[in-house]
Length: 280
Image 1: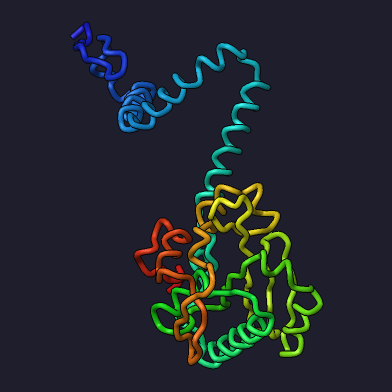
Image 2 (image 1 turned 180 degrees about the horizontal axis):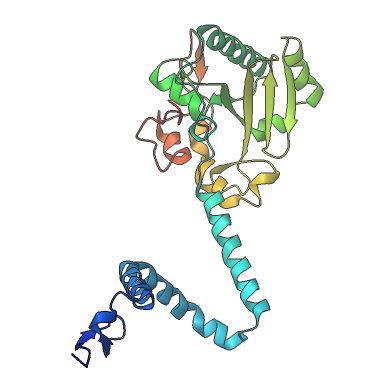
């Protein structure tokens, strides 16, 4: 046996034939090469995706050069666009994005929330402002005739055109004389009324372009217009007075027209199913 036995085997990637020493098959270099070939074969879909991405960007890179600055700019723009899309596509519902939210609150906490909602309703009725239950509070009214068991706040919509005709001091006085404090949050375009424990969000909606669509106000609505267009916009006819009323914890409160029709606009991806807190 003066000469080693030699066989011929194919390499999976380049399909070329090679010769190797059968008695040297346990050589570390050969083992590493074999593992690399196997790993590349297993990661075939990922490699195919990388090749497709490379094909799409190659013409751009060839035109604008291969300098590191250009690549950094391309990467930064791609990352920014991806992040912007994720932020806009996501529905930032309060309870749906917190893992530690309970399935139900204590009865005394829910009673305090109901009392605060009724006080806000009284204040807005005194001011003769059209308002209506929205978002999770509307789901509660339609499903259980009250707040949902896990609700930590309440949502009420209001028409901005009517609000503009109301004096700010008169608006605040209607809340303070009921023991509530109210503060405007310009970032989100809403008033927040609280008794020190429970919070009620009063969202302001305006038909900006007179195109029959109600849109949220606030600074945030401009840079994230895609998100607000997708999750906070609905036809204006749904909230034109007079509005129907439904029971809400022992009181009839105004809601948009059409039952769940407005929820099809505000919860476009999952309006047909019940969404509970992540920790429930």
